Length: 406
Image (cartoon, rainbow, N blue to C red; front, side, top):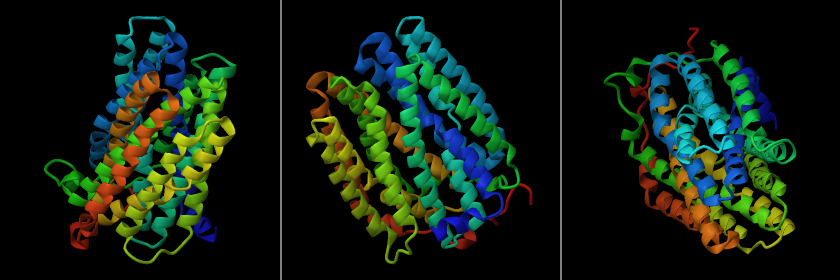
């Protein structure tokens, strides 16, 4: 734990980490909250999954653009505009669901809700890269963020389902709106640690996706996103089918809890050897973990399966973020991280929709196989593309790493 305490002593780190954490809590609440709200009003998992998929697709399409604008114009300016549009879309989604409007309005409202979600995850990792450069502590910082991502999904999933089950169906989305506003406004105000805008990340500059290694990572993240998207929809259906819908959040939280523990262990170790080999091995373990969901038939069994499967998640994600920082210069790093967020969003959209269709067609337990197949494909992509993950940007291609206040 000394490694984590050390990175948190970096000036300004505790503030931007806490602000980003609060804002990111709204992401799982947005996803689960919309599934619960739409299903409660329509009775259709297919529709609930499709609306969630549209929001995730919009998020994916807009993420690289927001990341590139952030590299060029600065994080604060992009976040202020994003938050305003996101809140307007979220209000429209809740109103459309509660008013029993034509179903197409749910999809219309889902587009700005997803597209304008503040890119706090990519931006906080870029701040770490700006402060620590290629210091060995950077992997620990990325591990910390991955651990916090899991805490986000543990707390956010439980909050969304608990609020919706005990208050009213839209309570999960209402809570999401409050948290994203508080976290984003606070993060925006922390200007001393904001990386300076870079001209080479703007007009005429190189684009992160031109790097072949990043394209491999994007392919892997699409498939992992399919697994995550399938899991969220099918887990709600699994718990509901057993008469315990409120347990969907805790079951998803168990998976996140396993990933949290694995992330703490992984990030505190000084790993030797090529990161791309660890990456492929971690993804094969991830596929094995995804298979466990298909054999659980009761709530206690699913809790155990979720916890064990969760142990396989963080090592793969932490290594991917480390590889991204090694492959790209700071001038396009936010865009690079945003591409990974976009890839997960694309996969999540497909997995959410496919999970809903599969659940309605063959039942929850068999529907988990969609996520297992996607995890196996992710491992295959990482294995076949391993040579591209060894290519690194030369130091001369990078700009000085400095904060906006310099």
